[in-house]
Length: 128
Ligand SMILES: [Cu+2]
Image (cartoon, rainbow, N blue to C red; front, side, top):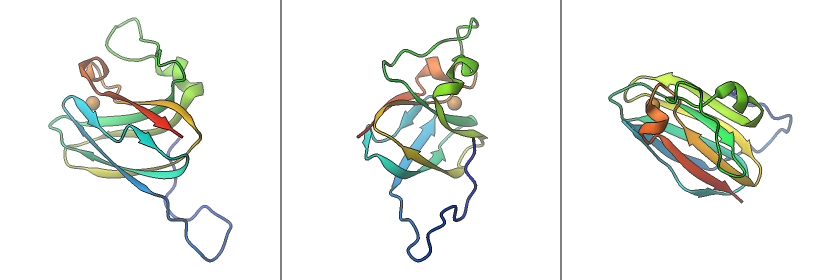
């Protein structure tokens, strides 16, 4: 579900200036704005470590996300339909961008490496 960099639009002329939203991941928290405006948005994700972290973005209208039976991670197979974006794990101090087009609703940002979600690496994001 990675988004290729570069210009995907057919429109010539003005390049799209999607607002940039800064997210910081660390052991074990995600700091991000709680509300963003619908439309195209660029998440600029910095990993403050020390562990590697990934980032998943899923729609979660009622906030209830399914756990795997290990009790340590969310069930990504059951979340596949709701998934809108993923960044694979990155080392400390990596900075990456994830470009998304978000429609209004409630989302959850999280890291699903073993134990990280329940350790606190999740945050609700409202798009309106
Ligand atoms: Cu993590």
